[in-house]
Length: 150
Image (cartoon, rainbow, N blue to C red; front, side, top):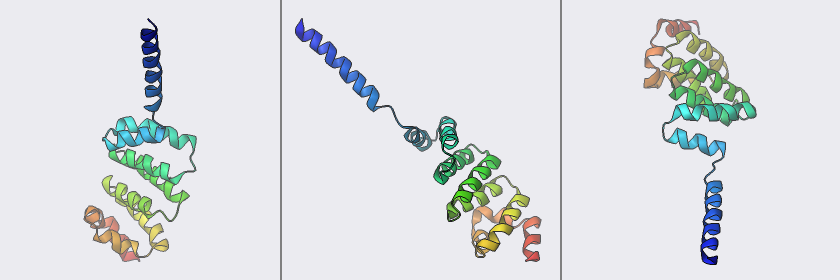
């Protein structure tokens, strides 16, 4: 009987220890869902993390990435802009802002952002003009008119 009680207690302790060890931190939960392409499940996790500490540019970037994958491009642009505002050296955020304007087919937003960025990073116009993913938007009348004004 003692062996039975010891075995049951051991199993209970191991079960609690296992349950505790499998509880992931929110960032790990986010990455688990994101790496599996489960963006709808990842969204509320990263959204809560951004709300709990809005001063972290990396969280805003992750939030924007999640929104981009869900094809919520205008919301993704806002998130990437916040990341870029918090870290002006984050050219990954800058790129993703351009990318989401292009994915949203928002030539006017793309041009407005390009105007501001061309002042800070003059070579950006040449860089985006070379990228295949921006070909349609840099071929637009809106963008060509912008280039003629330079």
